[in-house]
Length: 225
Image (cartoon, rainbow, N blue to C red):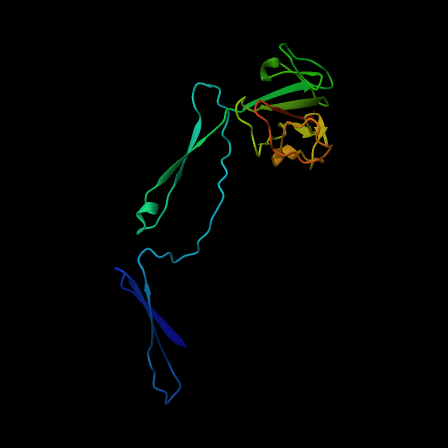
């Protein structure tokens, strides 16, 4: 067995020296072997990787007079490259996307005005006092509206099936058209790509693009337990 000793003078250019010694067979004289390498200060000795960052759960900004932004702080750990050593703050502008959610009782229509007509049916907001009982089918509508001056790309909607309800298989529609990946489980649970294309082929994947001022509407149904 051989033993390898590694030393580092930790000042200026680091000199890493490897001395190999060990128990050799009888009659053999050990000869130290020295391997030296000069490492310039600031040289990265590591695995270098890149990554993508996704910003989620931005929520809704209702006051249009206030410019929205997200501040993301990145921290570098280089001790020698001052350009990387300081923390960096990156500001990302956030457009004012409007999300609205409505509901209607499919089995027993009820609710208080004002109603919003979606796909020819009256839907009501959370204040619309829609009621339901066991066995009733409820239909939810989520409406996303892009700002008038900025299109959206990569738009997705995620929503959970309400407590004490069961998802109605294959009931999700985007702009009145069936969506890709719908089954016994709501495709909204994992995030559904949306767009404002009213001519999309049935069950085809959405592009995620919504034109400036465009609207995408997702509807799905559940049964009350």
